[in-house]
Length: 438
Image 1 (tube, helix red, strand yellow):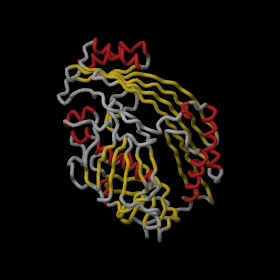
Image 2 (cartoon, rainbow, N blue to C red):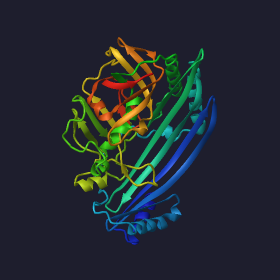
Image 3 (cartoon, rainbow, N blue to C red):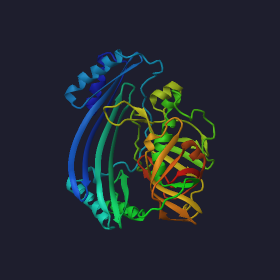
Image 4 (cartoon, one colour):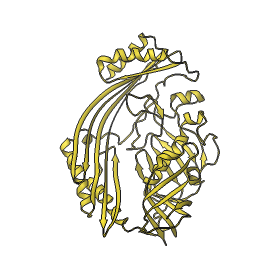
C-alpha cells in the first residue's frame, strides 16, 4: 500500500501537479442481515482502493481507482481534472507532518480475525434475546470491519492507521390484546465487547414497556431526551453549524466566537483522541494530527471545526477534522467524537423531574433546518413522567423546537453517558419544549 501511494504521488508530479496526495484504504468486512427469525444473508468481502488529489496552480483535481494497475492513469486524470478547474484563491496547501499522539482502543485482534460463522452466532444471539422477552424480531443485522488507511503527500506526510469496528442492531415488535408497539436497539464498538443477546433483550424490553400507550395534550413541558434522541437532533440540527466551511460561507448561526450559545453549565468538545472512540485515530483523513478541540465552554462558543482548507482560508491551524467516507471521496469537515459535558450530572435525572416526558428516540431529525436549527420530529418509545417516575407509555407525540434554544434550556443531565456513533451524550433535560399530542 505504501509503495502504491508513493507511485501515485510520483505519477501526479510527473504529470505536472504542484502538490499531490494519495489516500489508500484496504478493508475486510463481514455483514449479516436478519429478517424475522432467519438469517437473510451473510457475506464476507474484501475491498481496496486509492484516491488521488492533485493541485495545479491552486486548482484541485481528484480521481480514484480500485485496482493498482490503473493508478498511473488515475493520477494523470487527477492532474487533468485540476487543469480543467478554476484556481481557488483560498487554497493554501496540503497538510505538513506533525506529531502524532498514540491512541487506545481502536484495534481489536479478536475482531480482525473473527470468522463468518461466529458472526452468524452473534446475529442469532440477538434474535434469541428478543424472543426471550416474548417480542417478535422484525429485522436486524451486524457488520464488522477491519480497515487500514495510508496517507502520503508531497509535503512529507506518510502515515498509516489501522482500526476495527463492530455494529449490531435489531428491531422488534410486541403484541398484546390487539395493541402493538415497536422498538430497536444497537451496539457499536471498536472492540469485541458488545453483548448481542443483551441488545436483543433490551430492544424487546423497551417494546414491552411501550405497550398500551396513553394520549396526551399539546403543551410546553420539560422533556428528557435519551442519548439516542439527543444525538440524532445534534447530528442534523447542530453539528453542521460547527463546520468551518459552513461558517465561512454564511451558512451557520454560530459565526461569532465568544458569544453565549448554551447553558453556562454546558461544555461541548470534539475529541479525536478519545479512548475507543468511533472517530478516534492518530490523525484525521488528511494526515493532520488528531486533537481535543473545545467548541463550547461554560456556554460560550470558543471555535469551529476545521480541515486543512478551511484552516488555511482562516489563517489558522487545522483542528484535525478532515473526514472521508472512503477512498472515492475528497475530505470534508465533520466531528470526530463530539462529547457533551455538564457541570452537575445527576445520578437519576428522571427521579429529579416532577413532571414531563421522556423520549427514547426520534424519527425525522434529518429534516431539521441545518441553518436555523429548527426541528420537528416524531418521538418514539416515549413515557410520561409523574413524581419522578416514567412508567406510563405515550401513544404518539411530536416534539418541535430550535436546537440553539434547546442548548440554552438544558437544566440537567443523567450519568447514562452513551456513544451513539461519534456523538457521546447522556440523557439531557430541557426545561421547556413544545410537545404536540393528540
